[in-house]
Image 1 (cartoon, helix red, strand yellow):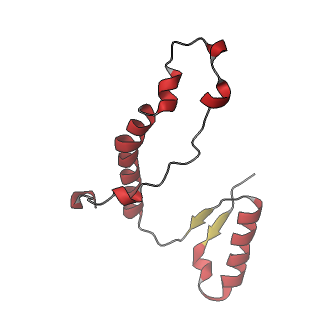
Image 2: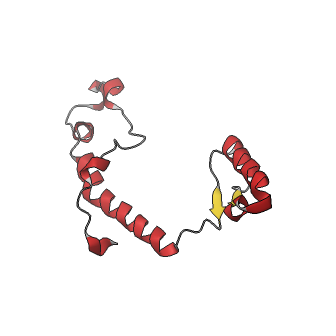
Length: 109
């Protein structure tokens, strides 16, 4: 079993319909895919990854460890006395805080 790889260069010219069909199939059957020939500079991708990691280190861990959910895990309360229905909660994605990003340092770019 292999993850579909879509060559985005095929979006230009005669292969456009075939490439769009491959994208459709990959989304429908897999839900994700890998792309090649996307034209995005590797250096830019590395910078974006670095910024995401920096954001995680600075904000997400602090937010996670300061949350009431985590504090509840450190309780002295016996496990059998815990109301697991109200204690077990998983964040599947963080709440958007894009508005907080107002002053990126130029040296990051």
